[in-house]
Image (cartoon, rainbow, N blue to C red; front, side):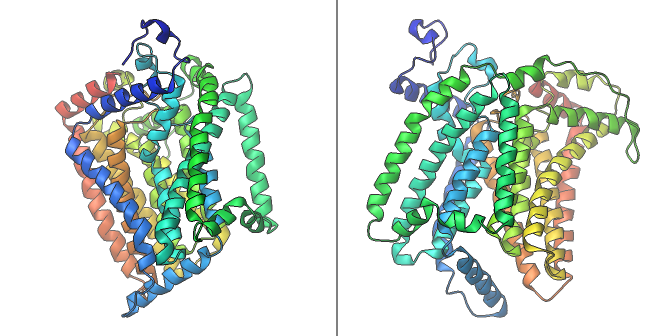
Length: 527
């Protein structure tokens, strides 16, 4: 890796493609070497690949399910989902592009290879940052969920003899859409860094959102989505000319990667106004909160922790995107309630990956000061749990509320299963995140909106495990909703909640250990 004294490299905007690719390899190897448990990271990577292959192949082989009442109900659900997706695959592909743009907007154009403090001695070129954001995109849980959904939808609709060619086209579309979403993300990030760019972006986003809602209410959104070019793309990928379509998409993806260097250089060459405003801002002291049902110390600590979350640019953007993204899918696509049950867990998992899996990383160097406060350690832990729980609940609640707007009030059995599934996955993700936070703390700098709370390989492991657990939980409650036994979801929820409570108790007991707490504080404060 070059240093800032390497002559011509002192200007990081003058990098060639060869230099950028070579430096990207150095940075990826550097990040890989920071993984504490490489075997577990490799296993998680294989798990992600296995899940992707399963979503691409298995749904198409589920049409012949039959025999037994439960299997017949599952077959009916699959046939209902297939009927819903037929003719709408092009709209789903367009929705992937829209959500990809939203994800790139929320993360400032992509994910960063090095923090700002590390870049001061190793000036990474904007081209390397752009390529890194593309390579690291599979570590983003929101992106992974969209990919799995699109692959599964294609496998349900396309006949088996056409599936290989269709999935090839879909994968190339994913690459092309991701590349151009990054281009748009860098452009928007550049606008944000101008004098009044934040206001411009917020107003434009609000206008687009209002237009989508109006189109949906007037019934014009579905015909407009069907008329998009992606509908013809969906028709072409199951025809005899899918190979030519794949080549065109490969060219489109390559052009997108090439075009992204210009807005990336522009955006990264401007000062990060939002981050600098947070770093240099002055906040007036407020009165001590008057607790209604909390302890006074816990209420004050919760205000401090909540302020740390909402003052972070990356946290604000990420929570908004994760809350609105799955909810918009449920609102526009008109998903069945069995499909909606998968979304709260995935939304909560994405929110936990913003900071919850390393919950004390928001304190940074202030972790040492926090430990000097005359407050019982149990209250510090309880306050952090409350703030993480608030974020998980708020993000997943948006998804459920938008699904209610689209589908109306569900039947009693289904509504009970949805409510219990929502509660279970939030508590499940919360307990897992707090255990990981205590067991494996990391020293990270979250001042950048593109930072991650743990090394990239570790984040891939966390994303795979959280998505697998919450998806299986959602499937169990979807099956319970189809059974004519109202109390079965209740029994299922009690079992899950007891398991999560045990894990939370174990994390709390480890935090209360003075040596463990000192290790965590010293690790987090070494930013």
